[in-house]
Length: 234
Ligand SMILES: *Cc1c(COP(=O)(O)O)cnc(C)c1O
Image 1 (cartoon, rainbow, N blue to C red):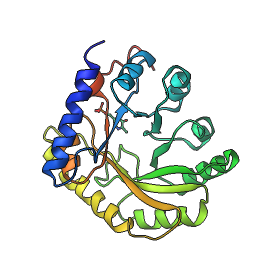
Image 2 (cartoon, rainbow, N blue to C red; image 1 turned 120 degrees about the vertical axis):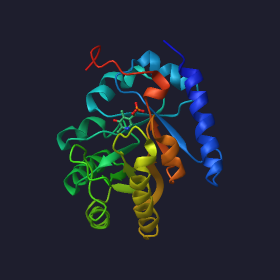
Image 3 (spheres, rainbow, N blue to C red; image 1 turned 135 degrees about the vertical axis):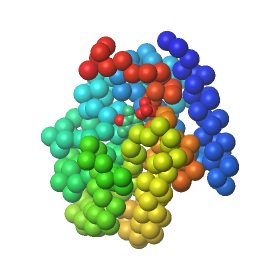
Image 4 (cartoon, protein in one colour; image 1 turned 45 degrees about the horizontal axis):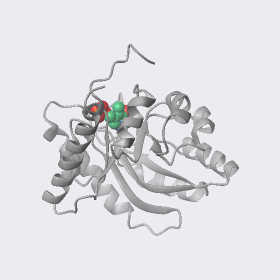
């Protein structure tokens, strides 16, 4: 099965080292293990090695694995269709990929039915890549205000960004920095349903740069579990 524990130890070391170098504290950055395509056995091995948070990008995978994985916080990190919110509303602790008022309203409706408040992040596509979901930096303020006004069972906990893939991750620094600027700006908003705590940026190949630019939640799959084999599953 590889070296899941060793990989996690190494990423924890690197993320703490990077945080300290950037003037922050060790432990400031949460490692969310991205478990798409991984088996419950692999995921449980990661949990045994100290992982407390896991991220999936497909609703179906959460449903398939949920009962077979040890207690852990689940994050929905991929694009979410409104008609699937009902399947995960009672399973995930945060949804990173909110990119429309329509989606937030459906999350709100389902959360109300369950008597809970759902934590969400707004996904910002600062590089304006057409292939990626997320709103523009310009739309962020009005999206936040609309959600606060209309969604009483949703709490906005911060922002999320997926940078374009570049061989040299220094090339995406600017996109992380833009989202960090928005994060600092809107974290000052005073509202009972806005409580910024998470800036979700950085994956296997760019998490160090993301932390340097202010990320405090990294989503790492490949660097923990190895390359994904999409032919096996999905
Ligand atoms: C797959 C995925 C990741 C993790 O990517 P790796 O390169 O395997 O670390 C992070 N965030 C999202 C939204 C993903 O879909």
